[in-house]
Image (cartoon, rainbow, N blue to C red; front, side, top):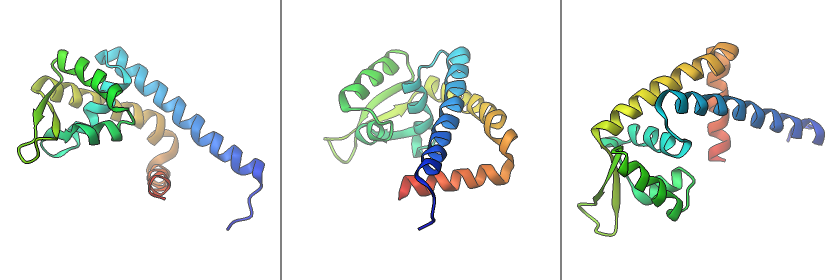
Length: 146
């Protein structure tokens, strides 16, 4: 194990958090300004857009979005009312309900992805460059999976 002092490692972690928060705040503000999306629906739209058939089981999506089942239900209800998603029963397991992007939801998700990419190019890729951005992503994947 590397010999790193307590103060130094805590400072490193603080910088990771501060860098993430500053970037995420800018991203969420830009998404809200251009699309009127709150953080919960924004995250859910992007997760569904990256999923096969633009669909995921409701419980899995709630877990990935770090929401309780009750919290997710409230967000999903608002998104359904806004015409962004619909709920469909599973064809193979009647206990499972899938959340599926509607055409309107797919359009909004694509627009959100485009804006996200623009903000991340400005806030991450431009100051770090491609090599360091790739290393950052690989490092965060390692931490996530550790």
